[in-house]
Structures are given as structure tokens and as C-alpha cells.
Length: 108
Image (cartoon, rainbow, N blue to C red; front, side):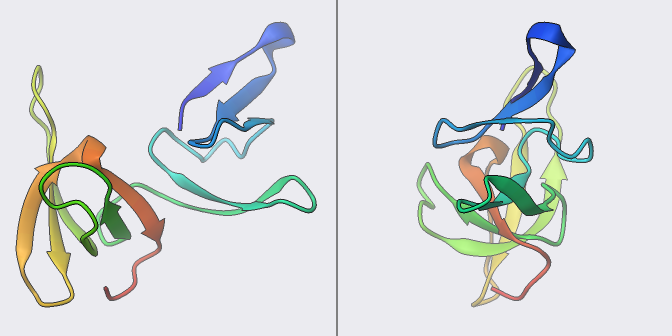
């Protein structure tokens, strides 16, 4: 979820479905997930892209798998790697840009 500053220095973010939300919570960062209320047009809650949160793999060979984010490896100049543990206890690795946070620290 990209964050930017628009005309008049108004902060905004753009969601995966193309919505633009002005004046988001300053704690929301790139790759975090928001809970959006369509009736009020406001952000209700958000989940951080951090270890211990529930994620879903959206690209690559592990597409569709759900699990807990266990570890993030930073590889400057290359793809960052995320290690995820699924409900069966299997740990697998994928690129960090292939995962999407779907909840806060829950069991898969």
C-alpha cells in the first residue's frame, strides 16, 4: 500500500483495489493491511507487516497458502525472503512481496 503526499501536502494512501484515502493513520506503513468501512469511508483498523501476523501467499509456487509470518530475511539488491509456518506446521519460504497480511497474530 503506497503512501504519498499530494497537492497541498495532503498525505494519502492507495489501496490494492485503487481507492485513495486521505489523511491515513501515520502508523500505517507500506505493506500493512487496512480494515476499511465502506459505509463511512474510514479506516477502522490495520494490521502491520510484521513477524507473528497471519499472512496469505498471493503469488509464486506457494500461492493460496496461509500461515504465520515467522522470519524476514533482508537481502540488499535482491529479493527479501519471508518464512511462513502453515497450520500443518510446515515452514516454507517465499519472496516477501508475494505475501499479504490478512490478520493480527492468530493461528493459521
